[in-house]
Length: 200
Image (cartoon, rainbow, N blue to C red; front, side, top):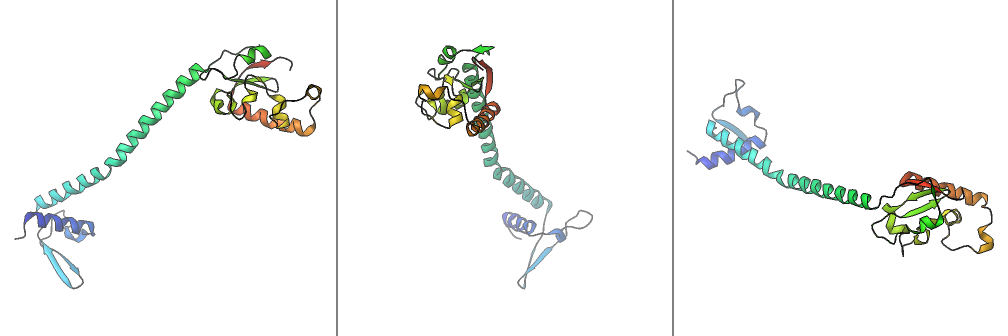
């Protein structure tokens, strides 16, 4: 008689290779179970304890194969929760109470100098808290010139250069108004409005 572990290995092989004919319709086990491969007939008596062992091995293999996936899912969930908590704390620190009207002096206080505080930018009469994009509008950043001030004309002109005094009073042309409108809706869809800016 073949050793027990040989029966287990062979039965596992048969199960993986579609051995529906190994079982009687009434749920019993045919003895012997035979398979013909390339002219070679192989047979093995499947006893109940063998079937139980195969089931245990298969179940254990499935559980072990999913262990890495479960570990990754758990690590991802923990990382996401930690990131959500960091974002919540940042939002709290960057909060500023809305006002009916902001002046130029008011905005200057929130130019991003505080690395965790509010960062305000005025666009076409609305004041936005752009703290989420501190890496753009903070001091020393690409658009840092707009932080803590009215950025309307910068955006309309698509320019980061300061205007000369005589240009500041010039009305915007059609192309500049179109550019400003595009920028305004970008800000409105992305940042919180905290009030109106004086002069609009």
